[in-house]
Image (spheres, rainbow, N blue to C red):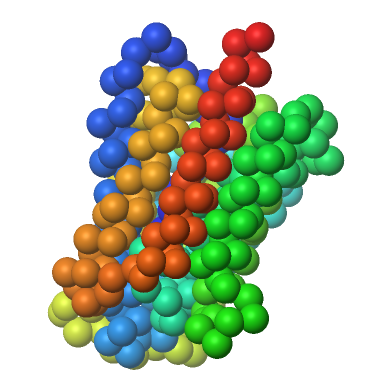
Length: 299
């Protein structure tokens, strides 16, 4: 899921390099691997709450193991209320996106998640009080048009399932905005820890009511989902600390390629022409918005 697929607010340490590119490529691959593992579990009949539990439980378990020497420091937040709110938003995003995977192809759901940077841009002016010029607004409107092409409202081919990843993109945008505020209060590792911890705690209370004893294959997929999510976040942090966001952002669109490959190989899915056209418009508008933000920051 591009649904866990950004860590805004990071400040690059070496903004003149492009060393972060290979890290963001790894991150996009791991995130889509996580999504493919989840879709395989859902296809095999495992309940959504149980699958979401695996994604968060093994993520937080990985973090506890890696961060054991400094876990007490990492677990201290300067803004606990915002941390918890943001973590719940991430859990909501994950739940909506994974639910969407039950109804729509992997590539189609991933394409809808590309709307989140555009929604962040739209929210920048009323919430973050950031100026948004007419050109960036045009990019946002064009991206929404691309989404409408994929959704096809009023068409006999519309799938209500596609509205779930669309809603996930919107909740993820709000999550990103809250992360910008939180970056001033807590370090990234603290934010990552709380995101995984809150998700694991909440789903651990719900999953037992929807539990099916996993097979050996299912355990492997549950572990894969959590570990890929955790390492994917690490790779994205590495990318953002090695290169400026304006350099690595275009490579985040590789998730469409990974999602198409996984969808075809594992689920015999191929996006139709409407989805391809809509995804191309969303990607193009998103890249244009990134370009305008870079130009504005250089002025």
